[in-house]
Length: 155
Image: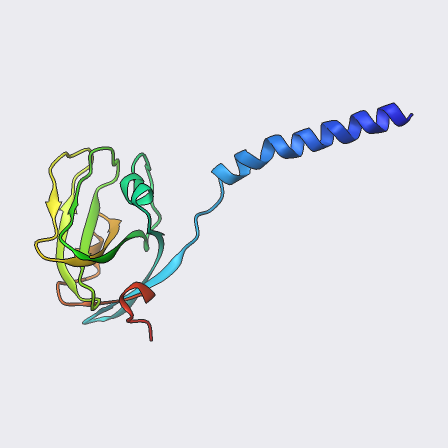
């Protein structure tokens, strides 16, 4: 009887340990709010924030879907000229290049699998990637303010 209980406990523990990595792979990423102040009012996105070089390099590669009003914010740590590309990215994306003060400096469209580099054109602190066409649809424009703690623009 004790041997059966011990065997059951060991099997239960092994099943829990073997499922932990699977659960981590399917865990929902941590999301943070980003608000863009447009002429027609504020628009809130829920975004993943990429803060490390490894995270920034991985970005949205190999993702086939991103929900509406979701995105990815790239934090470069200090204002600098950056170049983005879409080599292994499946989704068409709008890239919003954002200055340190939170204003949008440039908006460009990234095409899936393109190796063309998309430059910021000036020093920026971050880049917000959202579904392609969303900027035009929601009337997000150059000069709009992006509110997030990265830019010190959270109210």
